[in-house]
Image (cartoon, rainbow, N blue to C red; front, side, top):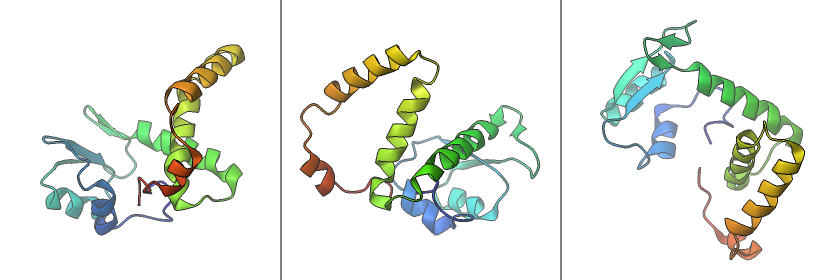
Length: 136
Protein backbone atom coordinates (compact mmCIF):
# COMPACT_ATOMS: atom_id res chain seq x y z
CA UNK A 1 0.00 0.00 0.00
CA UNK A 2 2.66 2.47 1.02
CA UNK A 3 4.46 1.91 -2.24
CA UNK A 4 1.56 2.99 -4.41
CA UNK A 5 0.45 6.14 -2.65
CA UNK A 6 0.89 9.40 -4.43
CA UNK A 7 2.76 11.72 -2.10
CA UNK A 8 3.31 11.11 1.60
CA UNK A 9 1.23 8.89 3.81
CA UNK A 10 -0.49 10.34 6.85
CA UNK A 11 0.11 8.85 10.27
CA UNK A 12 -3.42 7.36 10.14
CA UNK A 13 -2.59 5.54 6.90
CA UNK A 14 0.68 4.30 8.39
CA UNK A 15 -1.19 2.99 11.43
CA UNK A 16 -3.73 1.18 9.25
CA UNK A 17 -0.99 -0.52 7.22
CA UNK A 18 1.40 -1.44 10.04
CA UNK A 19 -0.86 -2.08 13.02
CA UNK A 20 -0.07 -5.52 14.45
CA UNK A 21 3.02 -5.90 12.25
CA UNK A 22 5.65 -4.15 14.38
CA UNK A 23 7.66 -6.17 16.89
CA UNK A 24 8.53 -5.10 20.42
CA UNK A 25 11.71 -3.03 20.77
CA UNK A 26 11.64 -2.10 17.06
CA UNK A 27 13.52 0.98 15.94
CA UNK A 28 11.66 3.12 13.43
CA UNK A 29 14.14 4.62 10.96
CA UNK A 30 12.74 7.22 8.55
CA UNK A 31 13.42 10.41 6.68
CA UNK A 32 12.39 13.66 8.37
CA UNK A 33 8.73 13.85 7.32
CA UNK A 34 6.36 14.85 10.14
CA UNK A 35 3.80 12.05 9.63
CA UNK A 36 6.35 9.58 10.96
CA UNK A 37 6.73 11.49 14.24
CA UNK A 38 3.09 10.99 15.26
CA UNK A 39 3.14 7.38 14.10
CA UNK A 40 6.22 6.65 16.26
CA UNK A 41 4.53 8.31 19.27
CA UNK A 42 1.29 6.37 18.77
CA UNK A 43 3.17 3.05 18.70
CA UNK A 44 5.77 4.01 21.35
CA UNK A 45 8.63 3.35 18.96
CA UNK A 46 12.19 4.57 19.22
CA UNK A 47 12.40 6.88 16.21
CA UNK A 48 15.62 7.62 14.29
CA UNK A 49 14.99 10.48 11.86
CA UNK A 50 17.47 10.99 9.05
CA UNK A 51 17.91 14.67 8.23
CA UNK A 52 16.79 16.04 4.88
CA UNK A 53 19.41 15.48 2.18
CA UNK A 54 21.12 12.70 4.15
CA UNK A 55 20.82 8.97 3.57
CA UNK A 56 22.22 7.68 6.81
CA UNK A 57 22.89 8.70 10.37
CA UNK A 58 25.30 6.54 12.33
CA UNK A 59 24.28 2.93 11.80
CA UNK A 60 20.78 3.84 10.56
CA UNK A 61 20.52 3.99 6.75
CA UNK A 62 17.46 4.65 4.62
CA UNK A 63 19.11 4.51 1.20
CA UNK A 64 18.60 0.78 0.79
CA UNK A 65 14.82 1.03 1.18
CA UNK A 66 14.76 4.13 -1.05
CA UNK A 67 16.59 2.18 -3.76
CA UNK A 68 14.20 -0.79 -3.52
CA UNK A 69 11.21 1.57 -3.58
CA UNK A 70 12.54 3.27 -6.69
CA UNK A 71 13.19 -0.04 -8.48
CA UNK A 72 9.74 -1.34 -7.52
CA UNK A 73 7.99 1.78 -8.86
CA UNK A 74 9.98 1.59 -12.10
CA UNK A 75 9.14 -2.11 -12.48
CA UNK A 76 5.42 -1.46 -11.76
CA UNK A 77 5.21 1.22 -14.47
CA UNK A 78 5.03 -1.49 -17.14
CA UNK A 79 1.64 -2.62 -15.79
CA UNK A 80 -0.03 0.81 -16.04
CA UNK A 81 -1.54 0.39 -12.59
CA UNK A 82 -2.85 -2.66 -10.76
CA UNK A 83 -5.79 -3.32 -8.47
CA UNK A 84 -4.89 -2.75 -4.80
CA UNK A 85 -6.16 -6.20 -3.84
CA UNK A 86 -3.50 -7.76 -6.10
CA UNK A 87 -0.57 -5.57 -5.02
CA UNK A 88 0.79 -8.24 -2.67
CA UNK A 89 1.04 -10.64 -5.64
CA UNK A 90 3.08 -8.08 -7.56
CA UNK A 91 5.27 -7.45 -4.52
CA UNK A 92 5.99 -11.17 -4.16
CA UNK A 93 6.74 -11.39 -7.89
CA UNK A 94 9.13 -8.44 -7.63
CA UNK A 95 10.76 -9.96 -4.55
CA UNK A 96 11.21 -13.27 -6.37
CA UNK A 97 12.79 -11.55 -9.36
CA UNK A 98 15.19 -9.66 -7.08
CA UNK A 99 16.08 -12.85 -5.19
CA UNK A 100 17.28 -14.58 -8.36
CA UNK A 101 18.36 -11.55 -10.42
CA UNK A 102 22.03 -12.61 -10.56
CA UNK A 103 21.35 -16.22 -11.55
CA UNK A 104 21.71 -17.52 -15.08
CA UNK A 105 18.50 -17.92 -17.09
CA UNK A 106 18.54 -21.72 -16.82
CA UNK A 107 18.88 -21.53 -13.02
CA UNK A 108 16.06 -18.96 -12.86
CA UNK A 109 13.84 -21.24 -14.92
CA UNK A 110 14.52 -24.22 -12.67
CA UNK A 111 13.91 -22.14 -9.52
CA UNK A 112 10.68 -20.82 -11.01
CA UNK A 113 9.37 -24.30 -11.79
CA UNK A 114 10.35 -25.68 -8.38
CA UNK A 115 8.89 -22.78 -6.42
CA UNK A 116 5.67 -22.72 -8.41
CA UNK A 117 5.09 -26.34 -7.51
CA UNK A 118 6.17 -26.20 -3.88
CA UNK A 119 4.91 -22.95 -2.37
CA UNK A 120 1.32 -23.09 -3.62
CA UNK A 121 0.91 -26.73 -4.60
CA UNK A 122 -2.57 -27.00 -3.09
CA UNK A 123 -3.87 -23.51 -3.81
CA UNK A 124 -6.61 -23.03 -6.38
CA UNK A 125 -7.35 -19.91 -8.42
CA UNK A 126 -10.62 -19.55 -6.53
CA UNK A 127 -8.64 -19.36 -3.25
CA UNK A 128 -6.75 -16.33 -4.57
CA UNK A 129 -9.98 -14.62 -5.62
CA UNK A 130 -11.55 -15.09 -2.18
CA UNK A 131 -8.53 -14.12 -0.06
CA UNK A 132 -8.36 -10.91 1.89
CA UNK A 133 -5.93 -8.29 0.48
CA UNK A 134 -2.74 -8.17 2.55
CA UNK A 135 -2.00 -4.44 2.34
CA UNK A 136 -5.41 -2.78 2.55
